[in-house]
Image 1 (cartoon, rainbow, N blue to C red):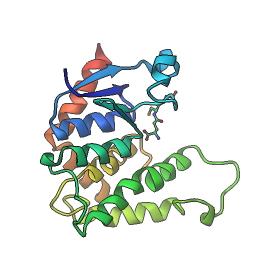
Image 2 (image 1 turned 30 degrees about the horizontal axis):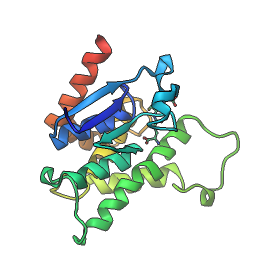
Image 3 (image 1 turned 135 degrees about the vertical axis):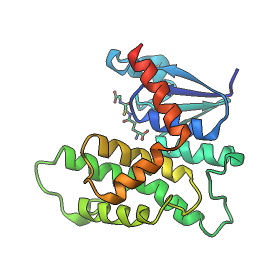
Image 4 (image 1 turned 180 degrees about the vertical axis):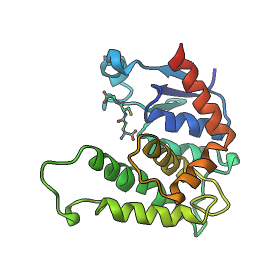
Length: 205
Ligand SMILES: N[C@@H](CCC(=O)N[C@@H](CS)C(=O)NCC(=O)O)C(=O)O
């Protein structure tokens, strides 16, 4: 029995973790939820994630939720995969910055753009400031490549990369060369291809 269980719905934010698990390379099992049937609100699942959301990851007896936290956790728990910047490495701070930038800035900026608020909020009130600044900061970070941390692919690329790919797919990110090139580098990764193929298999079933 694998020690890792992903509570998953495809495609959804739990696909970020499925890709991460493929990068890690440890055995895992999947428990599929049908969001349209309300599986995420059933008492047995709410006992796992009271937010009623996927993903959730069980590792032994520990349950971790929030996609970016799960990716950070997996990178640290399985250092052989080389997806983390360990404590003590001076680059760790930058690595953490990108892991938090995903759910803290990039995702809310994109979602607010897709579903605008009735009243324009003041820039200072929004943790991400404004959409254009987020796009410019991100474009500069991925421009040089190949990855956010330079030559090392890390969990931060899974978190940010999944958002970039998803944003491009749904035309929620501008078609900037920095983003299309970064998305192409991501899709050349065998683990990303495996995760996508497995998710598509389920969707077709
Ligand atoms: N902050 C959470 C968000 C998770 C989330 O919103 N998941 C969606 C799927 S993309 C979900 O479970 N939706 C079902 C629902 O809200 O009923 C994370 O980053 O993991």
